[in-house]
Image (cartoon, one colour):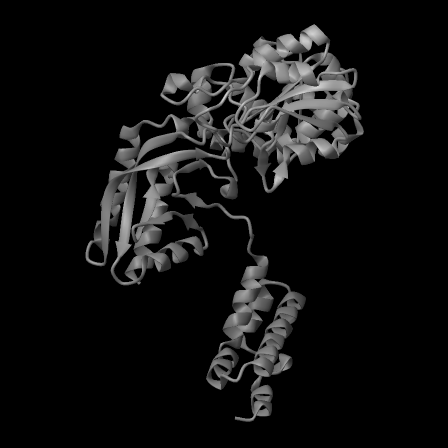
Length: 466
């Protein structure tokens, strides 16, 4: 077939604008947007004709032009960031936004973000205030620190701390703690950006107190300990405790900084998990400055929280980087709400979703698995569905060796591949993300919220029944 015939068969813009479906799109959306999409879709077909000799395929594209225009316009006006149902069993799933906040906290937040607020206004004095003031006293009360502030993430927190306390000075850190914190951001790179000079001591698996002692000189600005929360080195290992480092720092009048990473405020060993050092432990040990993440085991928003000695934090608040790294009103509001929950440990476990999912009772998980299984009974002729034991993980670079007993609903469809089912769920308007194992779609019920079970069952029935 002559390609010119294909070019001539593409409807003109004016003709398409008279189509009933296109007219309804213009009535619903903006005319200029629809016209732009029409031109883009026409250009795609032109490019296809130029490079592709499959005429049947191109004719199909031309015949589906109006439908494709409609889909493109709808996509233009749909939101890219959407709610996802997490069936992976990974509680702090970095790709799915890590910690989630409760509906109670979200409802309060909605009032703040849809109105003006006293973010930086002292209502008592009628003067300018400080955004940290809304949660600083709370953090100090909970952790025992003298002062506190927050920036937009923990990498920023580490950079600000080093820039404020050790600029153009040496910072001593064990080689075994030079971690990559995600997205290829590494402690040495963060340190270099802060204009502090890295002094590596010890080896990957062993560092001794004398290694720190031998590295100290007149240009030492700080001793840095990085808690390796996202990996474990097992076997022939040795490290120096934070208490020993603090004692050494005091002897030499050198401040001690600890990046504790996951930022846990509750002793999780009481709930059957591996012990993870708490922020309170570090402050009690004498650490001058501790930094940690807001959206890991703390269970809050993305933030880098800095606690410790007031003289150092006052210096950080005046650092020009603080302006670049500062948190917004959304983060400040959620941080206050999250830290209020920690005034009582039982409230924190109950009302902070991250902690409630980690400590979720296996009987409750099994009950929800049975509920979903019963709702999917209508699929018994077109899919193999079972309740199985599985293991959840905390994720987000926290407690990497920890696995949590859980229950999952496994699904193997008979009328399509498991990969196809996984894809259809993932590409749904309200996506569901699970995992595939042994040719079965696994929905780990630990991370399925109670109000998502009915939604999930309807999606599965709709997709598999088709």
